[in-house]
Image (cartoon, rainbow, N blue to C red):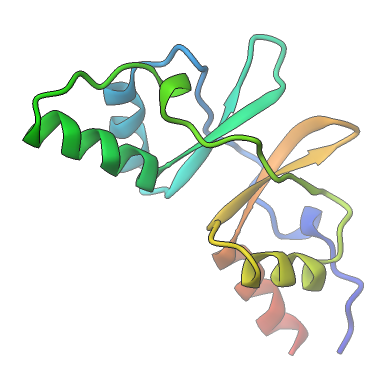
Length: 131
C-alpha cells in the first residue's frame, strides 16, 4: 500500500467556523444548512479554541425544547481542548486517529494556522484510492 498521501490532498479547505460568542441557534441553523456534523470555533485572531458538534447542539436543543432552557453561546457548549491534525500528516495515520476516537472530523493546521478540516468521509475516500 502506498502511504505517501497527505491530509492536505483530501481535506476540505473551505472551512465553516464559528466565533465563541455566536448564538447557538444560529450555529445550529448553519450546521443544518450545510449538512455538516461540526465546525471549529475560532477566537478573534483565528486560533482554534474549540469544536462545536451536532452532539453538543443536541444537548442544547433537548434542554431548550423539553426543559425550556435558554440556548446561550457556542463557547458555553463547545468541546475543548481540540485535537488538531497537521496538513502534512500521512492519511493512514489519520485513519488510525479516527479509529481510536469518537470524533467525526478534525481541524487541520499548517504552521499553526487553520487550513482545513478532515472528516471520516475524506479519509475513507483516500483509503479507497490507496487500496
